[in-house]
Length: 418
Image (tube, rainbow, N blue to C red):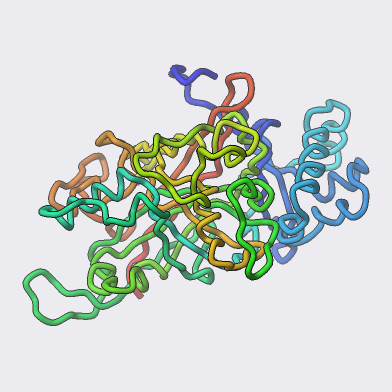
């Protein structure tokens, strides 16, 4: 399908055999038995049962798909990831094998299963890697100064978040409470956030761990990172504004981070690889992605992902991930350059994805200019989120033969403060 096509892509277009993202699900008849599945169109293939029925994998790979989560598969490493993916692709592209799994009832309607958080989140780190987003925020809060801080183009800025509040798409988000200082007030008050926001991001899931004291170079990115997913970093802007000086985000971010139920393996996104924007400052060697070998075996570590943000069903933004200044490989290199070790299940996020155009801004803070210019639509008028609002992120990337690779959506609905 060409980019210029006006036909809305179907699930079969976006989640075909060239995609096959991984998830974990339960069925109504076995709600306490999580199973690994791969998505095919609007259906879910019971990956472990299919591999067993068709005798697709040999030991030790055979056990990777029968676990109740993706954790063993993530830890198995890149060669195993490739073997398992090739076997599953055979199962859904060979007509005879596909007929066998269908007859065995192993291809289930997506609407009939409940998706679970697909892996155990070990650590969570969030970056701040869109130059457009950082510049817009800087202009909002430092109108008389430089929009970017002096360090911004020398390193990927990030903070260590809370792994225990990462939730799967569809989980309600309760409006958080916290300290905030109203405009003109001298003292803070406590109460529900009145400036609840979204951040359209992409999360990267670490599979292979590293040793403490060992830095992971950029060309090690594809050996350690299993795949990616859409991520919404919900943000209480009023709580954040009061607390974040001098140590950065804390309670304004830690109440919930939503991730998609489906993890797209990096191997499915080969056609989406792209070079990042041109650098305007020289980089230290460990971050220099123009050096020989730093870009691995492709055009670069950027990804051409087209994100759509919907508020109550209406499109409010379309941020382009290809515009991100810092890549996931640079983020990983910076994350480990001090010797910090990676663990299986580590999740790190890109930071808000924003582009140069008004319709490409990935958060309400930018879209409404910090609440000064409300957005309007069938949902009414909004500066920040109201109770009952539902936000959905979707995305696609270029795939083989001019097709598209869909990313699993991430959705959350705001519930009133408890």
